Image (cartoon, rainbow, N blue to C red; front, top):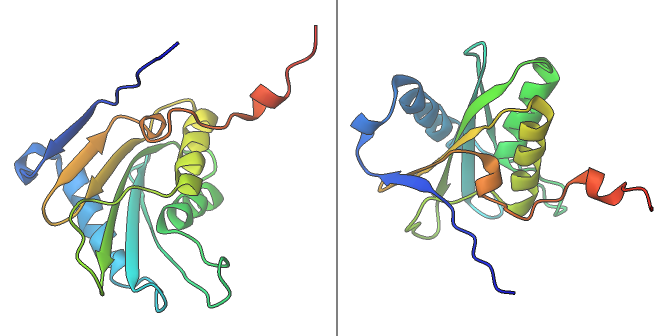
Length: 163
């Protein structure tokens, strides 16, 4: 049986289609991307998320010469939010990247690890997290993290009792 998965998203270049908070998240993601520690890849990533209390948490990628000891910007922001505000929902996250040694032609999405963490955050808080991927040419808005990884890993799939 052949099946098809479709993902709905909004793509725009018009900043006027964004809310004030979305623009603020994008600005903060750019600012924090510029301070990422990425001396090896020269690929700086920034993420900014907003919690239900309107607190904004940022994160950037942190590399290490002993690969894979580094961590992605999205997980820095998500884990920081959960550490400091464990009972607050994450409403939105904006993600951007800056490459020093090549040209980016499209907004970058989170890696598979970060997609899985985003989905688990959605599952834990039982509400969707809106995703905003952007660069200087394009903005992509997705309704939720599950749109990024339709066949996500779910722990309860491993714990079914045999009949």
